Amino acid sequence: MVWFNVFGLAFVAVIMIPNIVFAVKCRDGFENMWSNKAVETFEQIGRYGCFFTMIINIPGTAFGFRSDEAFAVYLIADAVLVLAYCGIWIVCFKRNSIFRALALSIIPSVIFLFSGIMSRSVLLMISAVIFAPCHILISYKNATERK
Image (cartoon, rainbow, N blue to C red; front, side):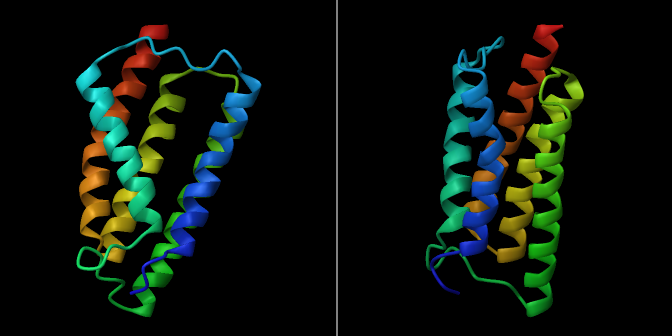
């Protein structure tokens, strides 16, 4: 397995596009209505771990795809999930709802975990397991606090 995953970079870059657009259009930023420093810290550790290990395969921790078919499943599934993520961002851009919060936190969590499993990247799986529950919890709590 090569150390650089261009497809992982592409998936991360596309996931970031709606977030960058949101940051530019909503200059006030996102107001965090629910605060838990421990959960927020673990979320950030998991997030950056996922970003890094989606792009960089560290030898001895990433073992590659079992087959060409597994690689194809990875590409197709991640592409569909990334498109769904962007689609939900577009449709729900102006709406704050529990659906939006959960969809936009669950989909990237699934992308990271699925990518780790398919590429057999131990560090990506660990990062995704740290990131997912924290990100989903923060998103859900913020959505319910706004109501």
